[in-house]
Image (cartoon, rainbow over all chains, first blue to last red):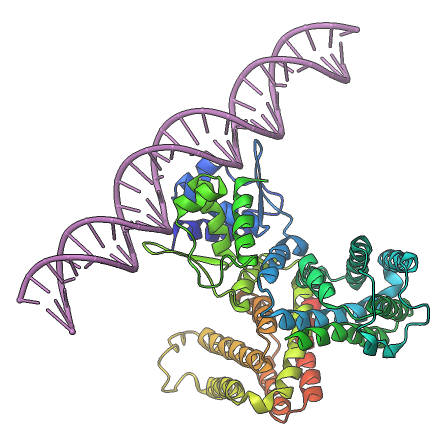
Length: 254
Length: 254
DNA sequence: GAGGTAGATTCATCTGATGATTGGCTCTAC
DNA sequence: GTAGAGCCAATCATCAGATGAATCTACCTC
């Protein structure tokens, strides 16, 4: 076992046995290094590793403190490594995301009565994306027909990157608001990690089907309708269907 | 941004843009430190952090290499922080675990035809726990001298720690085999992280209901039956019911 | 050709020193 | 008495150099 491992294990052990609680300050580097029997350099490597994991937080001139240990903090580094997965396991990652988001939708619907604030944010997110879509020059004036996927070759002008960014932002806000309504911070943190910005960017870049953005908007609206109606079954099914579509694109691409 | 962050970002960027692939060797510390414009100490802090995250692996006398970046490696540190959650979010953690294990059971059933090997291991795990349970009443005079030294002062059904450990081991093996049969490594790694040894220990210690072990065995058997029969619906429902029972204990305790 | 040995390479760790930032104390002015 | 400015000590951040330990490589011996 390396010195650094000794440091990591030592500090986590102190947290587990209660001698260090969230918010507590760690001993100064010199003392802690002496306690653990390592040099200051090795101590810093271990502390830094725990810092990356979100367990402790070092502040220059002040000290090193145990974080709140909230799920959102501790799960965050998972987002980093999920991005490193690259295309190899993109389908597997998204499958798990779909499973969890489906449950998010169900829980959000069950909690609808107690989650008015979060659901109001979801409503706002959909209003924002609807406004973006309305302001955008449409390719076809007609209604968004399901059969439009046959017309993939139509001469669509390059979509405005700013619009694309706004839609992505609203999408993130929508799903995040639902996760909050589900009232399970571990679930929310995991979904956040699995559906990070980079991953979503990759997804949306890959989906070039005409009318895809409008279709997403419709599906979001349907999901929110079910959630607000307190109908978990419909919310689950609609969320699952929504994310399965994305998954189909991943599967088709390879 | 700290020097260490520069190191972490720099190395992850090299992996993302393809200049470093899984299995590749990083430049020697001195060179890499010069490239990133940091001292060797800061470089080591960053590399060590990535090492804890399972992204790189340093070998003394050899070099530092990018790992395979497999989900099981990268998700592993999540298990550490899940243990740090302690009792505060135990219920939330287990709820997510139940959601994922339910899907594991469903996928395993769907894949039953192609997962004979993994399901054979699940069968073995249940046979092991069945044998432990069958031998338990006869512990005192039995030929199993391995762990049966704690016979002093026994009068009632004081559970043998060795048996408890064996049952826990079989439980882990059973769920792990099902996860493998589900054929989604990301899903399997997450379940593994959420249901770590320590968490399971806590659970099993809390469940003191008479006959709980036998009941668990029966439920496991029912789950495996459904999986082997290729019946995802039954497998899902039975797994969900199984883990909901555990969850009820958590909810009752606080 | 097989096996072992010596050297070079690389990471692991320690020691010491300096800079940057923060928090708290003191002193002063009103 | 209180509010503000300025000084000082504590603490983390970073660097530099040196030594030890493990591994790999090349060469040498038989």
